[in-house]
Amino acid sequence: MTRILVLYYSQTGQLTRAVQSMMAPLAARPDVEIVWQNLEPVEAFPFPWGLMRFFDTFPECVHLDPPPIKPVAFDPEARFDLVILAYQVWFLSPSLPIIAFLKSEAARVIKNTPVITFIACRNMWLSAQEKIKGLLSGLGARHIDNVVLTDQGPPWATFITTPRWLLTGKKNGFWGIFPPAGVSEADIAGASRFGRALADRLDLLHSTTGPLLSGLGAVRVFPGYIAGEKIAHRSFMIWGRLLRAIGRPGNLLRRMVLILYIAFLVTMILTVMPVSILVRALLRPLLKRRLDAEVARLEAPSGSSTERLAEYSV
Ligand SMILES: Cc1cc2nc3c(=O)[nH]c(=O)nc-3n(C[C@H](O)[C@H](O)[C@H](O)COP(=O)(O)O)c2cc1C
Image (cartoon, rainbow, N blue to C red; front, side, top):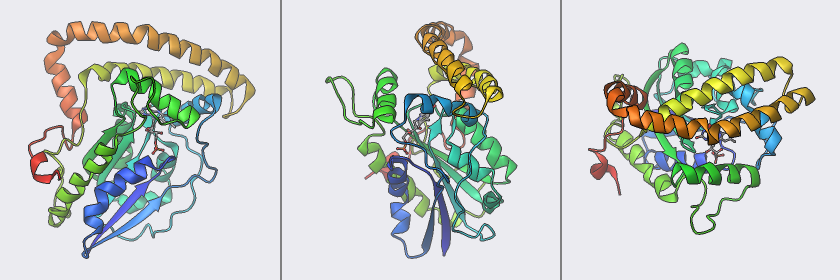
């Protein structure tokens, strides 16, 4: 019997459906037992989010300082053959309930165990995954694969559709140019290819240190996003430190400084970001080798190649 633990937290249920889609081929097998663990915060986060509450969450996200989650139902001393860590990205960091779990006593369940990370987010997940890699390595886990699903549509469209969804709950497409928010139904259904590929390789779980899901288009890093994410993350870290020094989430003075930061952030996104993207595009031929190496590092362990897609797609 292969025992798999799936750890997840989703507000709208999108991430849950996506990871269920991946696990469906395994759930159908009599020799596989799947334990599902929802990582629920003691105090639920709102959905849709109020604007101020939304932004007031970023300092704790980037500084990995979560509120508590409810106790888990599984025995942390139990051994699993595989752990799936399914998370959404909040402010270029793992969402707070996932951080709370990884910093809890129960996280010892993943020591010496293969772990597959599974992300469903807008499209900015690089810094969050670096943080997760650090936390997993500190816990002695064997991180073997990473699967990422991102919101449908080009970045200029999801820059509108994702926040609109988070702040109003509206997910529909509109004006004939904006697609529905979130990951497409085709991509959610397509995640089952990872489950089929895993089902064929369960015997390798104990010995492998490398990926089982390569060749399936598990992730794709766009070189043009790397610098922008780094700049934004640095800015979140600096302002986050200042805001945390002022007070706890909800503190009045902190919220007033936060309004200043939101204005600064919007100005930066509309001015510095496009200039930085343009400059980087011009410099790309000169930086190509360094960028290619960075893309390969960020796409590890599963990579973006697609040579096994035909074998596992339905
Ligand atoms: C507070 C907050 C911050 C977010 N920040 C990011 C981000 O930095 N990068 C990103 O790609 N998506 C970001 N998202 C989108 C989420 O990763 C995710 O796609 C969305 O919350 C829906 O998840 P769910 O359907 O599983 O609840 C953010 C969402 C929330 C609620």
